[in-house]
Amino acid sequence: MTRPRWLPAVLLLVLVTVSGCSAGAGGNGKTSAPTSSGSTTPAETSTATPVAPSATPDPTAGAAVIPPDCESIYSPAYLETLRASPGVVLNPEWTATPGQASLGTKEDTLLPLLESRAHLDCFWVAPGGGSGMGLSTSISLAASDEQASLVSQLTAAGFGCTEQGNGTRCAVDRTDEYASWGETHFVGGGLWIATSYVEFAPDGYTDDIVKTLVPA
Image (cartoon, rainbow, N blue to C red; front, top):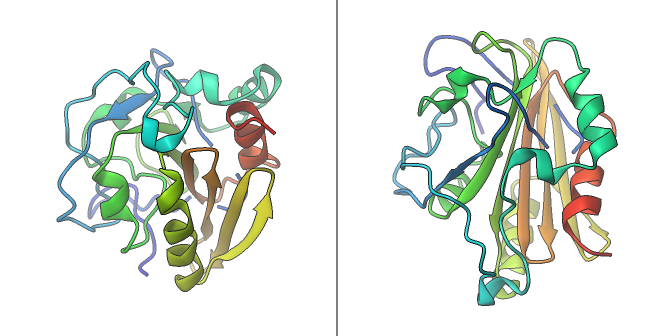
């Protein structure tokens, strides 16, 4: 796997390990429709026209639904903690341009799968453009019969996986000469919560999203 880049062939924006994303200009997350799975370039995001999250639960994913916006994936207290983090804001305007901000995974085997389905993307990144710090979270539905396959792919990619509540949490941390970065995934409760980070790994990040979105 190659080191993540936040801007295509220009600025490096590797992100760090923990556990989500939310509010910048406008404060709303971006929900993307399924896209072609042909590209596996780490810096690429979905190029589909954003669509509103479905209010009707997907019968293949139990009672789970994609959250309506990024603010709703965190507890109110944790959202305020993130907003107080220096150097990052939730979904600044530049992240709305396709290809400028990375999704919640850079794994070659998982990125096309994420791009092929509707997903809510939440970016905690620098307000002015790609930098060397930030994190992104992508939330999509995961049918019960595919959750074991997702965990198997994460395990094969070198992630350490453990049971957490009503699902499985998989994480990997990496460090190179440029930065510390990694990914944390939670699969369960009809959801796939994927977070990638570079030099920004808030304590309790994924835990707070899971507690907020997945009933115990």
